[in-house]
Length: 144
Image (tube, rainbow, N blue to C red; front, side):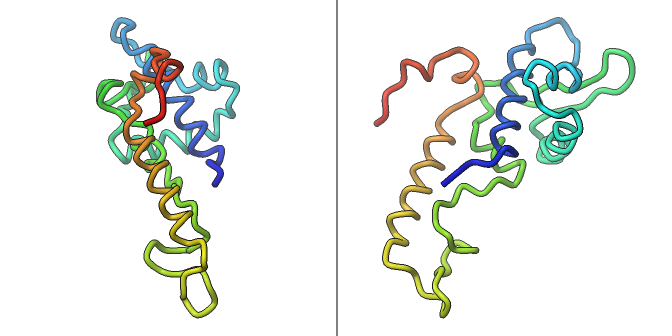
């Protein structure tokens, strides 16, 4: 399973945003995030439109405008971000959960293995918050 740039860049941008939430009342411009994280501005605009629709960020227009987190970094999980940009976390090749990947809709021999792996990845990303990422706590975290 591979997380696409959509999910990775959304997490990178949200972590950048979370790092700046304690700065006095200023929203963060996407152009600043794009420069710091070396991500295309037009790509960030697409991602942040999705993040805003899912309620993870708020936008402010005008001078000093940009984006802020809608919730605290501790309340925002990596899974929330990945799901907001429509990134699937499945490790199976099945198009839909519950349906098989074989021609007649049957499950392949290794289906359960990949489905369980996807569940573990989902659980892990749901257990990690933006606060964990920006504080460096993941460097000291051990797998359960």
